[in-house]
Image (tube, rainbow, N blue to C red; front, side, top):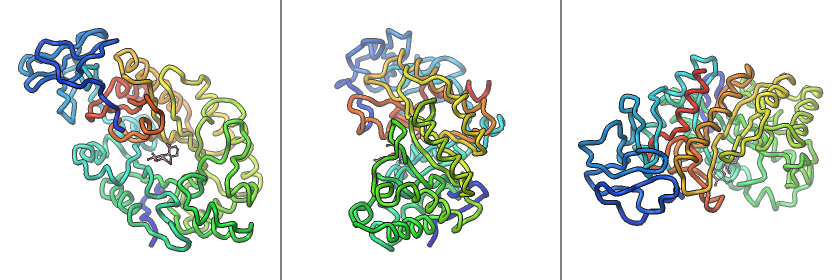
Length: 403
Ligand code: 9MR
């Protein structure tokens, strides 16, 4: 059985609140350097006053406030709402996919993952196809999930995501076909010779046809090829093998190579450009380059649009595929403000490049972000907080799309 394919495009920790107890009515519940409770007792909400002070006030007298228990977080008529930790939230009520489409992009999307789909407050937002017109499975289409032992193709979990996209009327980005990580040991430690591994790659990529990210993270940060079972056994030939196999399985599939730290000029970006050039010269099918964009607040590289244009000039489309912008916890209003600026900068770069076709955030909420379990002490990387309330970053995204 193949993964469900639909539309021409298709194919393919929790951030800890440090507070231990809840703050009493009228007590402080947030602000720069505040180390006390950041949630309020029942019947009160934490209202943002300024960057240095948020206060628990009775729910009845709150103005423009989004209670942390509200999953929808309305704007309250333009007043700055307060979200988890007594921090300021977003004011915009725009729908991201709708405005991205109106601005000429194909989609605004989010990653998701199978275990999260039992969270109905989460799916209520994910399923809104005016907010997200595209989804990417965070894990369930990877090699360990789809071919855990040789020839044993299981698409049960991947199909759940594919069917969800279909039901919601959302595009689906497959992720991924060939990656050194989440690779079952029968592949990585199978001691196959080149002919055998070539055939294994071809079989895998021609069966998991819905994959857009056919090749994931082939380079080291210094621009050299990553030493993994594919490169070590096949040199660079696994790339055309995988791309040709995916193309053969579904000629309408847009085939991407996806990586991180290629969003700025440097050795890794240059290596990726050289790979695209050589694939094009050899007539190997490749349609796009995915820029993951896993970033750090206040540390965005410069020259983003220029670098994206260096790729589109080679005749490929580009997409932002895994955007998130993390910070050192605890989150503060100042960090949220910088994060808003940074989201706006990244989205603006894509908006200014015609060949940048869409943007996917690597899940929309901190509740299910990969960051805290990977980077100790860091998190709050997504535009929605861990209570599913919109952060200032949301307004930054809207501002960039609407500019
Ligand atoms: O979000 C994914 C997380 O749940 C997995 O534990 C992790 C480990 O492989 O992979 C995460 O997704 C990665 C993506 O597939 C490729 N680019 C980097 C992403 C974050 O690690």
